[in-house]
Structure formats: structure tokens, C-alpha cells
Length: 151
Picture (cartoon, rainbow, N blue to C red):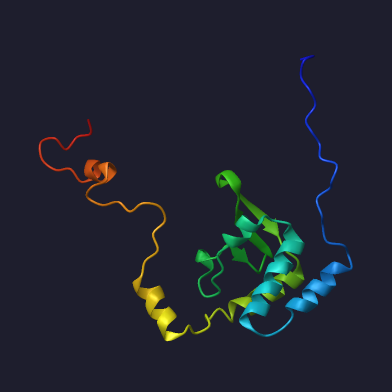
């Protein structure tokens, strides 16, 4: 125990928004377009809850089907899926609960140009390597006959 050193603590603190910066940020996001309402909802949830960006990106909101939604506006809470598959419930303010349905009502995506629409609908995006017949992993899954058990 005597040979242990204390952890290194950086001298520079993490930058945070000042009190005068948040109203300016909210005014910059104010508006009626899809992007402005989205940004207003994001800022409202961030300032109310302090959740991580990845947790915010994983929130599902469906105003028509409450069972599929992580947002409960009646109780003003959001179910958040965090790091390590942890699930927790965070409370949101009344203002954030008013802003979220405004964003949900404009979730019609802007129309894409015809060339982009064709490319987006007919070209799948693959992450990593596709499993094909030459892949050893796909062979072990699709083996048939007397030697179908894994070796």
C-alpha cells in the first residue's frame, strides 16, 4: 500500500456553460422548423437531466403508442438506457415536457432529392464484413447433414 501513488488530476477543469450562455443557446434554437424544434428539445432535456449524448440518442418517443416510448409526459420522466446496459429513470422539467411533443409532431422527414432517395432506398450500408458463403462463421451456422454439430 505504501508504494501506491495518487492518481493524476488534470489542472484544467471541464468547461461548462455559464448562466448567461444558456438563454442565448435557447434563443438560437427557437423556431418552427424541424431542426429548430429538435434542437430545442435536445437542449431542454440536456439542461434538465444532464444525461449523456449516447443516452439521449437512444431515447424512443412515440406519441401514438405509449408502450413503445421511453418518454412518459404525464409523470414527466424518461427511461434512459445507459452504459453497461443500465436502465434508469430521470425526471424532466415541465418546460421540457412541453417541448418534446412539439418536436414529436414535426417528425416528418424533409423530402430528399430523387437521386438521394434512390440511393438511400436501394443501397444498404454494411458495417464491417458481410457474412457470405466463404465466411467460416456462416459455414458453422448453416451446416447440414451428418456433421452439422460444431467441432
